[in-house]
Image (tube, rainbow, N blue to C red; front, side):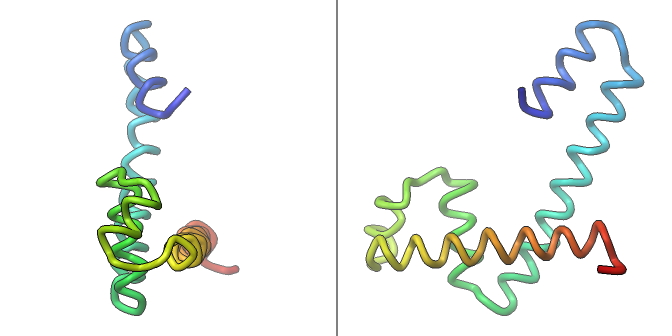
Length: 98
């Protein structure tokens, strides 16, 4: 079950404190993703653009390859790189000493 679905379930079940706590986690995760994506765009704009196309616009990798005029293998490499980069960056934000 996704985070938003859990929040809605908590709200329906009448536990506003639990719903508020879940929402704060969702907002924190979205903020961390936005900050990491902004940093990625500064150094690797193609990778950041691909994240936006695949994750937010919801194109398939094949559709993105066609739209960007690149091969599917290029999309797959950029997507793997961007996901790993974003994961590492978000984890650094959660564990500043690592």
